[in-house]
Amino acid sequence: MSQDLFNVAPAFYGMSLLPQKFWKDYGYALLVIAGSDGEVSDPELEWLTISLAKSLNVDEATVAAWEEYDFEEEELDEVFQKIDSRSVASFNKLLIYDAIRMSYADDDYADDERARVGEAAALLGLTKNMVLAIEVLVEQERATDKLRSLVL
Image 1: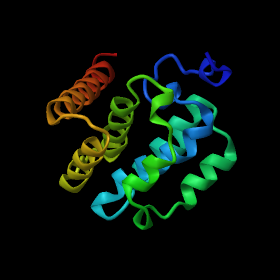
Image 2 (image 1 turned 180 degrees about the vertical axis):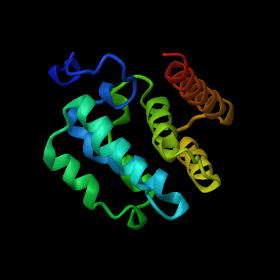
Image 3 (image 1 turned 180 degrees about the horizontal axis):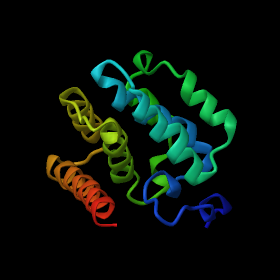
Image 4 (image 1 turned 60 degrees about the vertical axis):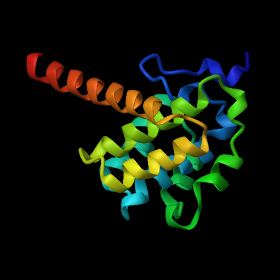
């Protein structure tokens, strides 16, 4: 197993499993999906560049590249071609999982974002039922987080 994969945050299931050399393009794919409603909101960008980056010790150059990236200028299939999805089992599911999590960061998983997630899933060979299952998983995790904050 590659040394890149040992630097994993225990509570994180998505991008942490991807070799570091693909993190920049993975982030670009997330930006294209989250920006499909016309903008990447501050909470969405903070989820990527602060929360995710900090949990994975993403280098500053990658974070800066994400912050400067023009998500409106690139197509998903072009971004996906830059990432070797065969390098990680369940890569396609992980990317959709992270895209949904990032899209929810501003508490609004917009219809355009949902549609772009569906487009990305189709490009990655995932069924609509798998996307629905991942959406439900993210919603349940969000509900659990809200309950935890209320109870504790």
